[in-house]
Image (cartoon, rainbow, N blue to C red; front, side, top):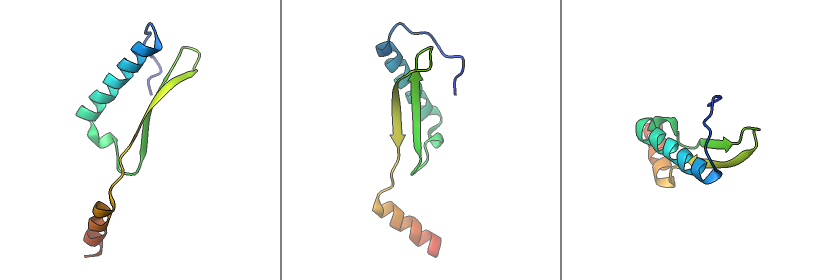
Length: 74
């Protein structure tokens, strides 16, 4: 959580900034996005009103789940 924040001129600029932050996290720390866990980034104004959020969810396909189950059994 970023308690300090950054002042940006409008929500469109904030959206682009948030997307670039997420891109950096995905590139530099991909392990932060776990399979079957929700991960999100909320952007709010100075009063705490949430302007938008970016949601991420990695879902394993049934083929991957079957393969994992086979490895755990044997």
